[in-house]
Length: 428
Image (cartoon, rainbow, N blue to C red):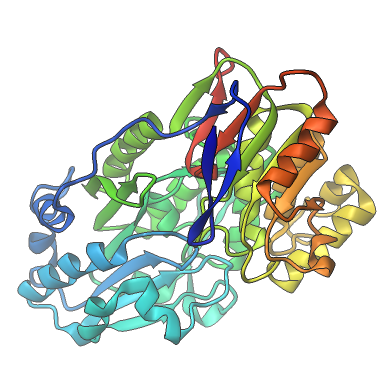
């Protein structure tokens, strides 16, 4: 049985044993005319006035967008928003697109077209990268739940109309992306991010994909977003071909909850038992652009593999491992081991940016250290990944079969990686 696994902007093929299982999203029809449907949703939002009514009489607007690590179809979402704001009397020079970078690097100007599309750039609106580390860009709104500081982008807070856009998909610590995450962690200060990404929050058993109720990460994000406020949300869900399957507009919390319910139905796939071998991806580009993001696919694979089973991961990593802070933390994890590493970073004083991704990788290592990685990383970078280099998925499968042994090991393939969430039946 031949299966195509997402890798960069293409696919890698692998032939699986006949008794293998392929986890795919349930069949969901894409929206036929996304732009027309978005315009309808702007006129029929959930629990808010129409966007035109909200914009009428306002002096300016801020539209928050995800950065280049998310496959949000901004070229479809943003133009109807701008057109509505223009009709309501807000001039283009008074519209700002704020890129929610969290702690990621800023999006360079030469990638604005890839992020937003040519049509958006023709409107000549302002485009600004958020910086979590620049105190001059931040205002203090007090504290949210779990004693989380609510430090939010000043430009956003000063705008008379606040709009958040994004993609609702399974998220490996916040339950689902989109909605409140545009604000927290998207446009918050580093002290907020220290609490949001703390060892305790990341280590909570409910801080995982498709888990919201009781999830402290989600609770912090919502509480900070409530303090910051948001007038209108526009989020979408996508299928395995990146086509829009659902459009959710209106109140930040009510519309997002509807989107999460829809995403759960179209993302969670039940399995009868854990796999001996999981062959997966990190969802392809842009999510598999570095090893830092690859933690997402690894943690989902670890959820469905047997203890000491094997994970075969395809993640292109065209931009390498990640930032130097992330590399330093990976070296520290190798040197200290999981427990000592986590103990070293439990407080805000010992917190280091990117430690949460390393913590998630440590959770994978506690389940299994049998990890094979197909990527563009060089030999030096491979030493940081806790994974063994492979040159093809077929090679990885062959090596995995030797490790698990037996005549008929249970192999599970997840072509879309973290966009599909496997759950063992009766365990959730």
